[in-house]
Length: 166
Image (cartoon, rainbow, N blue to C red; front, side, top):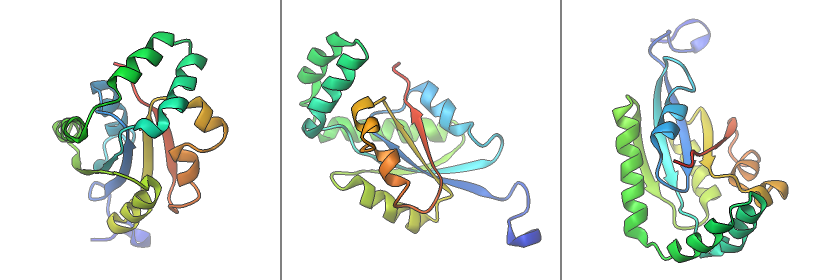
């Protein structure tokens, strides 16, 4: 039943968040996103697009900028992970969000993540978008990162958070 101004009565509103990720959520990531709105109930639509070969150069530049030269070599060796790893990472993330008390559904995004994001925001009448990825300094400098681009496409607030390295 709506309260004053048409807004749901306190305790009945479920805050809807579209969460964009590129890797499985860590325990710290889950705690971060599930506590953003204090005690309000939260529902997540998780869109996961793993970083692919097209981003290898940008990731390498980011790693060099951060002084993580060992990661440049290791990520090149790990970049052959297939859709099974991505599916397992998404399922892991959804399980952990649900275990933390949130509603959560999700999907893998093969291509055009920003268009899928726009559609998901409309379909689910989302209140906000949270982009939770590792730092991508080169993309962010040129405003080519998901959060910068999403701010011009979705019509709801976009929050950019850095994923935990653990």
